[in-house]
Length: 410
Image (cartoon, rainbow, N blue to C red; front, side):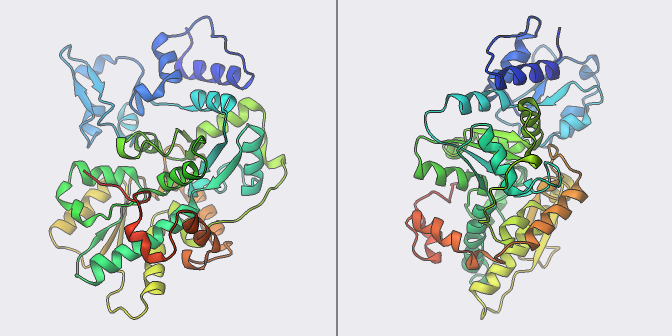
């Protein structure tokens, strides 16, 4: 019988070839996980482990209590509690846990789409698909797969930088409060919501750049299919949250995207460069630790040059460091007024499904940021174009938008 990974790769090859037949030998559970990933948690339990009754390394690693012991004594993953942080996968020495995959239903949707299909790439994408692959060549590669176009989510990081800077002015500069950034990492937000809920008043209700991008596309093209690609498994769970599930139809990891390129025999580095630049340096740097803080700091200074209170930021990456930073906040052991948390060491470039290691990924992101035509969102003409399409005439209106860029954290 084929392993989960063998089944996945064979089915992906058949999907690209538009062959709907099934392999002769497969585990029905594995097949269902691959064809209907929305029914399962971002982390899949592939097989029972004899040690699970005694050694609960996976359960003990989960800060969200998503791994539960059932009446039969076996451990199960609760899909409603799992964030996709992958701590349990790392803790399982026997390899019985694996990440879910959305490639098969996503490519099926691309093939059968009646309307436009857009690939939305996370800011961490630069350099992930071989060094010679420019954004323009990657755009051409996605078109070869059947996508209508590619959108850089960094443009919407620009827009949310403006919103976060305005929130800082309203909640910190005018009241002496502090702010916990809300618009990036789903693991960071889940940690605050589920473990430190008393701190939620300090979190501005902004959606992530991924959600903002998906909603914008669907507002312009209501029949569009939106697919997000990034280094993060947790984005799969974020896209399913009820209040924002209207934005993104499928979430792929960078590794899944590479699998699709391989199955389709597409080599992006050999394709035409359909270059377009839409994001500023600020939005591009969201991909690494400190990027959000840097972007918001520069934006606050640009929007409010005469204010006496400035952004004093503190960052943490990785669940343990984030929890320690939160403890310092609660105990008053920090002078910072803006806190950035990232669930992975190094930020998004350190995501478990990145193709490159964190150091190389960070170097690529920094280089891509330095090459940007615009330094801040306020200098970026494409930000104004998007806001105008949303019916937002002034930057200040970002604080009172119709709900497209905001959410009610509960």
